[in-house]
Length: 290
Length: 289
Image 1 (cartoon, rainbow over the protein chains, first blue to last red):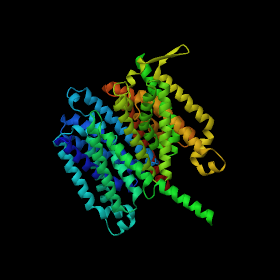
Image 2 (cartoon, rainbow over the protein chains, first blue to last red; image 1 turned 180 degrees about the horizontal axis):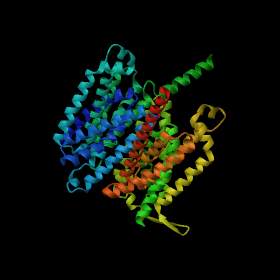
Image 3 (tube, rainbow over the protein chains, first blue to last red; image 1 turned 45 degrees about the vertical axis):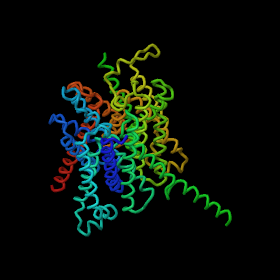
Image 4 (cartoon, chains in turn yellow, blue; image 1 turned 90 degrees about the vertical axis):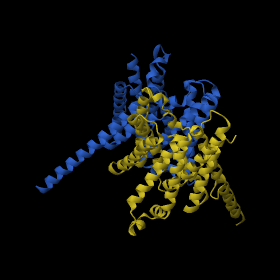
């Protein structure tokens, strides 16, 4: 059951879950969760274009293409919000669908080309964690570790940036640079993850572990640790479950495990529904006595 | 004739979505439409599993229920203190993942493959005909017409109420308008629109048609009526431009329509900025002289 390759894939999805849990927390607190969704969808045209231009399906080249269009989409959203009267939600929705549409256009061109059929680019839509090669996994390990280390290095600065941007500016922190670094890191997380879980479900890894962790704690440091842990557990458990039966894609199962954790947290966490129900009942009882 | 039906379908998608999109933009619910377009998959798969047919009617019901469920869950999470963008993100990714999983488990070998639901294949629309009242038209055209009529009826009946509930919800609630009912009724019509369009342009790209034309017309409209008219025009225009560009380069029609939506938006936004700048320069000149 625990063959060598599965062990590699397990540690890969675990690291991915941890990295996404950490960067997801920062984007969640900046209320940018759905920007991550748009950036993940926007990776598709980059992958297809990189393949069309170079004719190669080496992972680093595809990842570079994905990174460029993802970052471009984030920039487009910010540009539309600041230069037109559209609100953030409309800007995100517009950019997301248009980039994804362009991605489908390029992907169709790739699939029609003689080389394209074997390129396996379609697997980027839903991911193919179970069949990743060792070389692919090596890239995943490296970039996940870079993401985790850089996040820890910038922890103090980002914390200030999120909770008190005015003060951060006052003491001379390079705000724009810090914001850009955070965006780059989120894009990097997305690009790292799309091969394993696909462009559509990648945003789930950024959002769900963080949203679950938020239910348990009010402190940033414990939220980061919890979110990373939930992401890691979802990665491991999801890969494991999908390895039991062939034909189950890994991405959706990882997401469903994370969703399960969120669901449980929603009820039993300190701020959860069960606790609130009992508190309300207690209040009512006290009211009766008084 | 085949080309004719493809273009008619595209136009209907553009117009239906253009109408439905206006209130979506005004109520700042664009991302809920995106969420619904993902979760409709879940509803369609559930309808298939329960009825074991690919009947259009049950699909419509399943999709509408999934849409309402999405709107309800997002509202529930949001009202219990989770910020809205995260609530949307959690709900739609979970339900979408569940939909994908159910397809691979139970419906692997039927026509219901995930890529079809996501991207649609408008080029195949003319081959699936339906006859009703002696008229034979493609199934997709019937469905879109049906949803268009529902949407227009809803708007005609509740236009004043929707307007008030959108721009001044507190006042609307205080004079006793059923704003909760309006919210869910509107969400239902968005789900209907999504499922009617999913067969031709795909569930994800229908969001481009829902958000794009309305967002573009929001840039240049001064009244809500203007916004409806421009939105329909942009939707129809994007469908036609997208179709011919796709034919030119022999690529995905649905993808190209979404790209055309983006192009129209950019042209209008940049054109508007240029006109504004010219007007300002002109005013400046007048002030100096």
